[in-house]
Image 1 (spheres, rainbow, N blue to C red):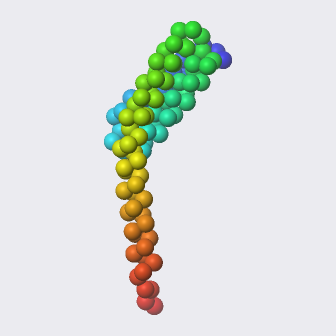
Image 2 (cartoon, helix red, strand yellow):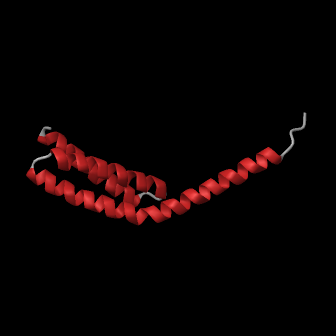
Image 3 (tube, rainbow, N blue to C red):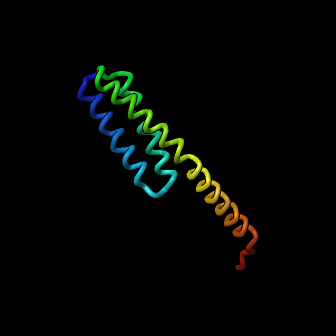
Length: 98
């Protein structure tokens, strides 16, 4: 891999980590952290020495932030799932009048 490509992956990882911290939606933040971790893992595996160390630090930041965001994302998903189940149950109970 060219060094420029590894640096671009690293830059994208930084942007995703920042977006994952700033975004309000917990599922989007968690997804951004996971994607940042994947990109920094690729940069760490294929980059040169300096890029590799930076990517490993960024991977640790993305992983720790993803662990921090997970409980909130899980609660958000459970409330969303409960809402969908209640809504679908209500729509099945209503008789259609024609």
